[in-house]
Structures are given as structure tokens and as C-alpha cells.
Amino acid sequence: MSEKTIGVFVGSTRKDSFSKKIAQNVIDLFPVGFNAQIIDIGNLELYNQDYDDMPPTSWVTFREAVGKLDAFLFVTPEHNRSVPAALKNAIDIGSRPYGKSVWNAKPGAVISVSPGNLSAFGANHHLRQSLMFLNIYTMQQPEAYIGDVTNVLGPDGKITSENTKSFLKSYVDAFVTWISHF
Image (cartoon, rainbow, N blue to C red; front, side, top):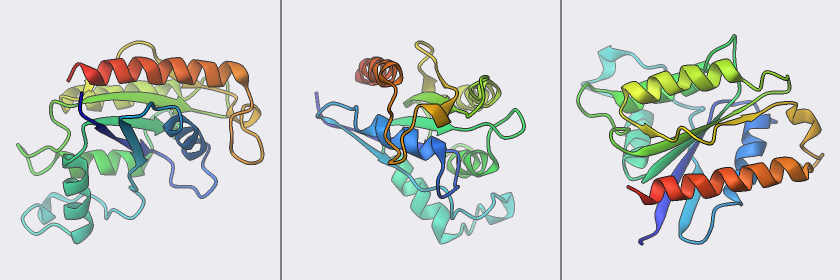
């Protein structure tokens, strides 16, 4: 099997984002041959169809980078029971212009992260709706909801909970198997 490149899209653009810390921990769990890297979405201009014919440079660069990826991992918090605006914007930019989606027919997965007990359940499922529409083959099981995140991360941003580490390792293993089918 050839090496696979996985784009990790973090829904939170906050400097000390819990989602980004979890994403960085998850990246370290991928085996040799699976190169996972965070794709920055924080500097993309808001999507506007008026710019489809002459897109901003940031859109062109983003679309080219995403188009080269073999798979996608979305790690997101929840904003008002849905997906953060920056992540939805990135998804929209990658999906346009119509018929030229860089997301089409590639595998993906979702991890939602929250300091609360609901574990960003709403964002996880709203995101899955968009991914399904965009023909991203989204891994159904296992699902990943990381709640109470402030108590599983140490001051250095590393996961301190052995249960969470073990779960995320099994999640990455399942995702690697999922990706290998494509």
C-alpha cells in the first residue's frame, strides 16, 4: 500500500483550542505510512459565489492542497449546537464551484470535542450531514465524542487520560482500516 496523506481540519481557530490539542495528539497516533497534517482554515475569506470566477489566492491554495489529500479528519467543537463558522466556510470553499468539489469521493471521519458532557454531539451530526452531501465517505463506526476535555488534557496539551488515549488509538486504527479501502 502506498503512503496516505490525511488532512486534519480543526473547527476552532482559537489559539489555545481544545480541538487543536486533541488533533495534535491524534496525529501522533497514526502509523508509519499515514502522514496526517493540520490544514489551516483560519485565514480563508468568507465564501461568496461572486468570486467563483476569480477566487482569492487563499481559496486557490486551499483547494489545491485539499485536492491532493487522500483522506480527511475533522476535529471540531460545537458552536450553538452546530459546526463553527470557520469550518463550514472551509467546507463550502472546497466544494465550489459546482461540479469541482475537492472533497468528492474520498474517505473522512469526525471527532467532536467539548468541555461539556454532550461532547459536541450537535456539531458532529451537523457536520456529517454536509459531508454526506459532498460525497465524503464518512466512517460511521466508531464514533468519537470527546467530552470533559479540560480534564483529559494536561498543561502541555498532551492527553493525560489513559482511557481517552486508548479510545483515540482504537479510533485511529479503525480510520486507518477505513482509509485503506480507498
